[in-house]
Image 1 (cartoon, rainbow, N blue to C red):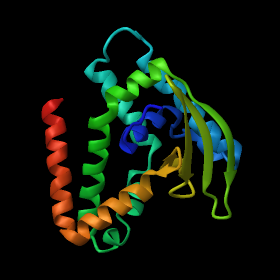
Image 2 (image 1 turned 90 degrees about the horizontal axis):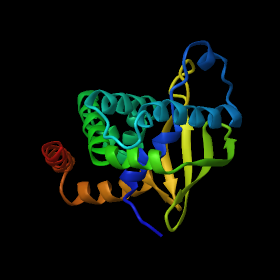
Image 3 (image 1 turned 120 degrees about the vertical axis):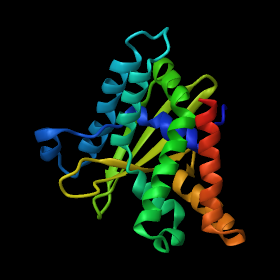
Image 4 (image 1 turned 45 degrees about the vertical axis):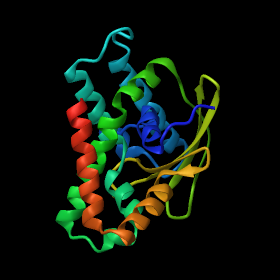
Length: 212
């Protein structure tokens, strides 16, 4: 079975996510149905962009539109908070904002092309969902690939009462994005420092931007 880094799957599964709008968002309840509907809604919105000409590369404007939809779908701040663990609590608001921005840009720069190819060639089916006592949702899905199927679990919440669903973690074939990052980054920070971790991520982003 094909294996991809967790960061790649973070963009891949954005094909199933979107921020709700206007009265529709206000009308949604904390239900399994609304969480799944949120994920399904983005398929159409992203597809409308990437399938305009399935044989051609996206224009700069279209790439920016896809990035905007990804930003609507994910709560990168919550993803960053949970991934950094105790190190997040020790950061100032300015440091937190910077980390979220760097991490988000790395994900986008690393995986946008792969995400577009997936959306053009593949598909996703949602198999089950549930809401916990805190109002957080988990939605299970399957993604067909050339040599098998990827099993994905989305973790979603509403950051505030007036916001729609946002993805803050995903688990691919049993591997959680948040848990994997937290283990790796906690070890790195303990051996080096938070500042060196951020420097390392900045350097990675600079390399990706240069290659792009």
